[in-house]
Length: 477
Image (cartoon, rainbow, N blue to C red; front, side):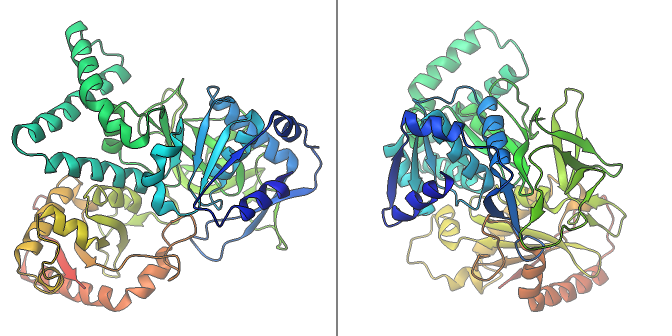
């Protein structure tokens, strides 16, 4: 049955948008797959730290994962419309596709992810699964349209988004905003905010995000426009999601509560450990690596539980940086702050050999020119080559505002600005769009060496104190 499903996808690959309608007979068939121990599916790990590894899962494990997700979202039914735009290398998306077969839902498959927003109104889904990067881009596009409005109308729209955000957060915190405030929110939603939501179609109820942490203020913004984002968390080596926020039980900033089918514990150092029926049995044609001890899979993710049982992640164990001040920081948390700038498409934070934090920011010149209201035919060299230009001064100001929101020990001391993106073809991204950090450092080695020299020269010219704001060294390439 699963092979047939893959064959259908292959046959439809030539069409930009293909629709699969699953009959009730097919729904019954997927529910009665024999629970044998034969391997039914092979998926690949993301390969962030090396070559991707092939992971074997049985039919029984697939059924457990389907049931776990279906039970977490009980509003999924035969009337539900889903939109698959993520690559099937994304394990969560693939299992959700199988859930569509189980419940008899309609699932649309998009061959080119770049066409997502162009096609979403035609599909008009009830639920959209994505990653933080795409949700940031959609938010930036909406805010850009707001800024393009003239005069008082632009100010009014900005106030509406701020007002509805505050009221949405008040509701989440069980704060009674009062009858007048609730009525104002309803009026604003009816006449203004509902029009903003229409970029997703007219039926979307909520968004599901995974693969990377989502900035808290981005979660709050989507909450304000009436589209809650449910963050989920999982690893390739466990076919069942480890934790998920659900319509009935959620908390912003967390990845939700663990699913009942899995046992989730924390090691002494805070590493998330997982045991249960979803954990892989072996890698394909490889000896089992020593990542399982005492029945637990070591995820390499650091986290903690709050008093209500919600799991919060604080970074990757193998990627956490120790600064010269002895502070441990998560690069992902700093990267997500930079991505809130609408013209920065990718961010990478790392530690220099001199012990200072640095970053590589991939900038979209088109978006940056638009921000500055520069005409489309303005000379690009003014930005990339003239570090004293007005372009660079505004860029520096935006970066300075981001850094001031961070503790002093988390502020990158040097920043490389690049108009070249990290790509899968160059080996800098995995198929799941995750950063291959060692590869990026290797590809930017000469620029990193230049940045270190500039930072050392800057440090020699000034006495650095934690209480001072130190202007970062910018290297534009």
